[in-house]
Length: 350
Ligand code: SAH
Image (cartoon, rainbow, N blue to C red; front, side, top):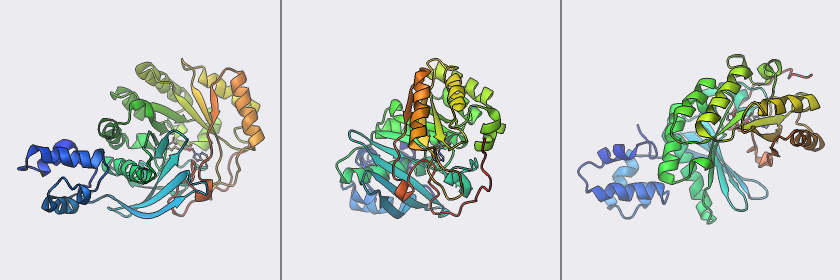
């Protein structure tokens, strides 16, 4: 069974075979410009609306919608129509823009111990339609506050580059049909080197963010287990090649974990990696958010500030990510969609 936001325009044309051509335009505009359900696209005849509502059901069943105390972060919990797996999407309002953080897999197989999604394990890949629909459903919520969606970050549950074809399908749809430019689309990866290489061959220059968290292989092997398959040297080469191909600055994400990766020496090692790229990589520091399965805590605000200062003094462009929605478990690394998690007994210490 297909779902509402899965078919391409050509596939919908087949579904509307025999109807006047403008019906396809009306349907496409309703779906992608006005984010309407078929039943609400009143330019279409009633019989066609009811037929489409049955043939093209939405793929996300809303289970819960939570808003942070300040009202600027909304987390959606969905069940997938097929398989009933839970996934989450986060909508963040800023002063002048709004960002949607989408999931690309139900769960994740990368098993990073400090990430709640990794602690819960993998269910299945999401389809292009399931990814695009997250954006549309969030955009509908934003529209109720007269807000539009400006940025999409592929930073929710799952590893986007382990599901690259479906993710790329979503990127194209979001770019071509919803109309968000490539500079406002960011794919975050744990460092799947073949995926970065595929991305480099794709036509649109989307932003690449790499979840680094350690600048030495021994520590990174522990924090980000896929590093044993794609060690730092391979990863850095893939980043250099991506940058060369796309001319887009690469970002390194770094979750600051108390006494694990927040020392002066870590900052120094990270800066050296940043300067292996030209222009140098930008660093996005994320104070570690609490997750049920990981006992180690995040670095103190003073340590986060000190770490950022060291990087800046070394000439690295480093920012600290604002923490959003921790009280509704909507922050980075906290998306588990209510699933039980595996507890890591002994996180690394140095
Ligand atoms: N799998 C991709 C997409 C997820 S992005 C990736 O790893 O890049 C989510 C970001 O939050 C990643 O940078 C991830 O490393 C980071 N993260 C995971 N757990 C976290 C936690 N507990 N606190 C802060 N950041 C975390």
